[in-house]
Image (cartoon, rainbow, N blue to C red; front, side, top):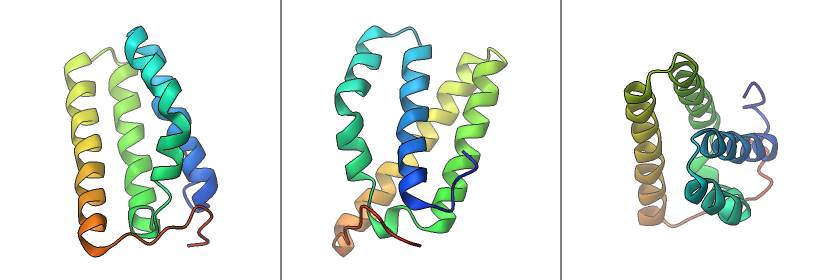
Length: 109
């Protein structure tokens, strides 16, 4: 996910990465759920505070670490890293909700 500087490109790459991981998991229910929710996920992550430059960089690093664990066949590490990654996102969204969301689907940060 080298395109972390452009928000709309980042958002699409983020969803695409999560979809690829869901498909690769072999869990058809998870893959189907991700497919059904892809656009909602894309739209819901378009908040300024959630996708600032630092968060985009950290997200790319997390995705790379998870991908390395998957490629190495280390299920436990991949699961642990994914859990931490998703948890960080949930926490960030919670903080934004507490402050009041600033919507921007096409932010230029």
